Length: 346
Image 1 (cartoon, rainbow, N blue to C red):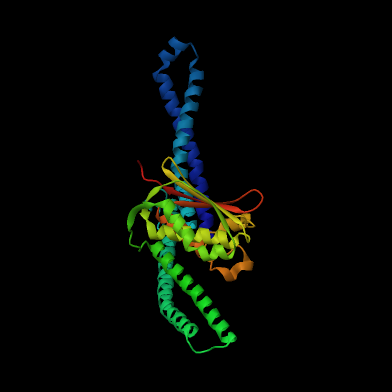
Image 2 (cartoon, rainbow, N blue to C red; image 1 turned 90 degrees about the vertical axis):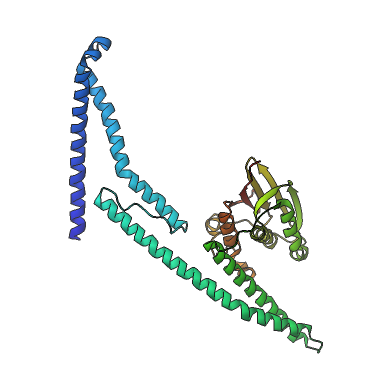
């Protein structure tokens, strides 16, 4: 407590001396300049030296104040920027520990210590998730395989047993998808995925994604209104397929029976823009803040239908490819997801 009080007292004394020194420096410099150019001021303008002294003092005072304020507040501005990056999940940011002012040095040193610990914790957590997910995959695949064999057996089974086998396959499928998403998300986070960059038709890839989900949209009688330009894109084809699959599957899932999904793909200058609109209930303003967080599900009534990793995976993949994603509600009903990708320069 005494240390904090002493520190505050020291800062007050320092700023008081700083203001006095600034005023003295301004007056001395202004007096020197006016005396140096005294004859020119008097002969050319006819304005009294006292008025020129005030004018020059004001200009010099403003310039000196601006420079000194920048010297004092630039570290604070950098600290604010660094804190924002940490809040977004970037723990690699570091601040300069060689500042002139001891208090700033101490703050930056403590900040760097905090980010190092957070980065170490994140690496430990990511490794744990990756290892556990990998270990889960083998027994899940074994259970799914044996359940499939029971379903395909030629021996007669009761309707009750058939229903049990169906539920086993359904839930092992969900677990397998969860584990796969966790493994992929872990790899994307650590950028451990081999980047197979190819040039391919982006509109054709999205159409392939629609066809791969045919059983889903046929079951819900969903219709599509597709307007896509013929566009070539250079990037990781397999990674981006996860983006389209997740967005289209969500639109099918949360849209009404017999609903319409609108998709549009256009190029604007050096940016490729993809939008997908559904006719669902929309997303609340609070949920929009967390919709891309891991394991977050805005609709509690449908927690059994997903694991909350799909949109988090989409965001991380797009971040890895220098792309972005945003969401907004449409007038009336439904919501719109917008993906932006960097297009190759012509």
